[in-house]
Length: 339
Image (cartoon, rainbow, N blue to C red):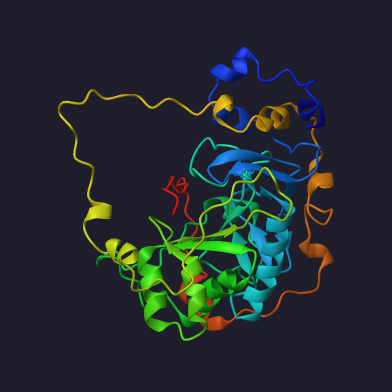
């Protein structure tokens, strides 16, 4: 990074420029040996100096380890560990199951998200961590559990959704560094109808496509991150009566786009390295840190060194915490527009 800023970094090669950025960043297995910094925007950038969430903790487990997406800015990893402890105290099993954060050097992903590129986004499952830690195979094959009643339009399933779900989502929104918590519009509607706590926090809870099986936590650009591009502020009220929120419950967001018979189909051009902040080329070229050195807290496996996890709440486990293990491939969340 220093070489790039001082003018001695020569920039991306011709081969790099011709290669989709998602392939370049998807191939990076370890983070850069540099200071932690988010570079660019949540959906158009990269990160230097990432750290990894330990695969296991007293109140969390990282899921889908084969994706190698448990990397993030230290601020994000610290928040997830704090949130996991707070969620367990609320009766959310023995903690949280953490999905995708970012790749080791951020950037576009080979599959799934359009955001999660600068280490400030993280997915948390709507399934609590069980009392017995999941095996590596269970982490790969356990299916997601939707909170929706799929027989009805945008309706939360009362057999799955509980007051503890609501408390956990609103706990995530309560931290000052959290800028947004993305959920399905039906879940936001349920919270609008039932939440009796601080209603101003509901403005942080943003409706978006998908997100019925997990919720997405986004934190603000850390102080001093000059290269991190901020997002527009969220409403200061609960945003439950706005026209923008009501739009989600019309046909328009869900109707397939009408094809234009007079328009010739154009194949989208893949995002390349030159489309990202210039410093991202230096991030790719930088030397690596080892996984142990770059793991937050200094150990890739953390739970064996920690006190016993709190006892899980039985009613939550009985409802959603014991899904069958699926043998088939499990889908990755598809890209969604930012809001």
